[in-house]
Structures are given as C-alpha cells and as structure tokens.
Length: 312
Figure 1 (cartoon, rainbow, N blue to C red):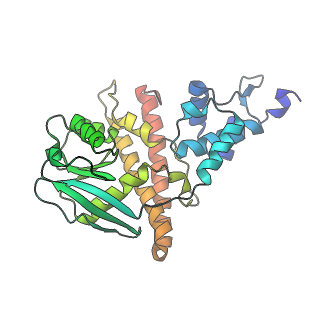
Figure 2 (cartoon, helix red, strand yellow; figure 1 turned 30 degrees about the vertical axis):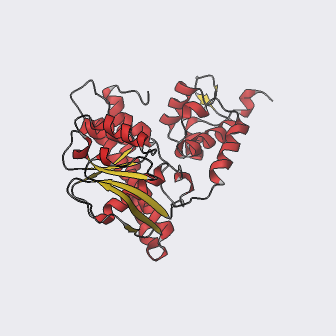
C-alpha cells in the first residue's frame, strides 16, 4: 500500500489522539527525527498509525525521565519493550531513609515519620561542619545548611556527596542568589528556604529519594489533566538561561512550572497513600495540573517572542 494511503492523519488529529502539543511534535521531528510524516500537495504533514504509536511511546517514556534524543534512535519494538519495563514496575516508597545532618545551630527535629507515606526518616550522623562527617557512613540523603558549605558551595556539595557515596541532598538556606540556587539544584539538591520545621524537612528528604527512583510514570493517573510538556531537566535549563532581552519572564515561568509540577506530584502521592483524603488530593492534582499546563503554554509563547529555541 502506498504511503499516501496509509498516512492520512493531520498534525491536529495526531496531537488530539496522543495528547502531545503540536509544537512539541514539530520540535521532536526537527531536532530528533522521531517520525517521518508524509506531505500532501500543500506540504502539510500527514501521519500514519505507526507514527501515532511511536509518538505515544516516546511521550510516555519522556514523562518517565528518559531523554527524547536517546529514544529517537530506538525501533518501535525497542520502545514498546522499554514502555513495558517502566509500566510493569510498581512504585516502591522507601520504608526507612537514613540521613546525615549538618547544621551549625543544632539539629532540627528531623527524625520521624513522613506523614501519609509509611516512611521513617532517621538521622544516623550529625555534625556542625560538613567535613566532620565520618568516612564510611551509609546514608541515603545528606541534609546541610547552605552556610556550612563554604564559599564555593556547589563544589563543596559535590565533593562531599561523592565522599559519602550518595547523590541526594537537601540544602536549607535563608538567602541565596538565584544563580546559586539553580546550580545547587543542578548538582542534585532539594532546596528548603528558612528555618523549616522537622515535618517539612522530612518531606523534602522523602522527595529527594523518590526523584531518583524514576517512579513518576507509575503514580495514579488523574482524569482531565493535560500531559506534561516539559520535563524537570528542560525547565531547569530554562531557569538558568540568560535571555538576550532584558526580560527574565522565561526564567520566572520555568521556576513557577517546576513548583507547580512538584505540588502536582505531591498531590498524586497523597491521593495514592491516604484514602481518607483521596477526593481532595485528586482535585488538588487536577487543578494544579491544569495550571501547570497553562504555564507551559505561556512558556512556549514567551520563548517564541524572545527568540529562545526549545530545547538545546
């Protein structure tokens, strides 16, 4: 059968079927050649069922944390196998999270149960300076105040994460330049502002562990919520970009979208863990997801206006 007869779906139809915004499909085609649509006499794209299947798989895997650039080289069979691998793995929340705590003003009440999660955070080592933590610790997360990281906070954090053989950190701070905050996040840190109570720090520690488990795809779905357009890595790239114009709107929008997505996932986790509040947290996740999607569309518009190409 000829390609013209098998490729009959317009860009709009494919976007509606897959839930992937048309702008995202165009970007994936241009940057990564994920599919090769046919063209009609007016040079408009036409897609087939195989294209729809492939795009749907790539969108699913992208939301699970995989890079589109890597997925584009896989065959349809390989994509399907990888989707099965992700969706076939049940989400496992940790039951015990071991923490090393570095806080110059004394240890907050960090040890305790994470509300609604069935997980306990336990402080196994404390120190007033990060260099005082002993070698050979077995920990899951390092919790440290920004003031204890010295002049080159990012380099110091990376050094001690490597020494302690963990990739997870929660950094508390009162004031820090946005550029430093971004670099700390890129180094793998969760940031908590102010003198946070123990339950806030415990939640941050718990989220730091879950982020590395690539479990987002296995959270319960919430009806009527638009798909995620940008992943965390892409948003953090935009958060750190230097616009050509004297306008930081792309950076601010990226920060808001990150916060919205974090709360959306938090609400989904609460819904899956706390049956008494299931209806409330479903509504929270749905409302936040819709607001997050509106922010993503604003990001597309602002970046187009400022000549910022998504994504390098």
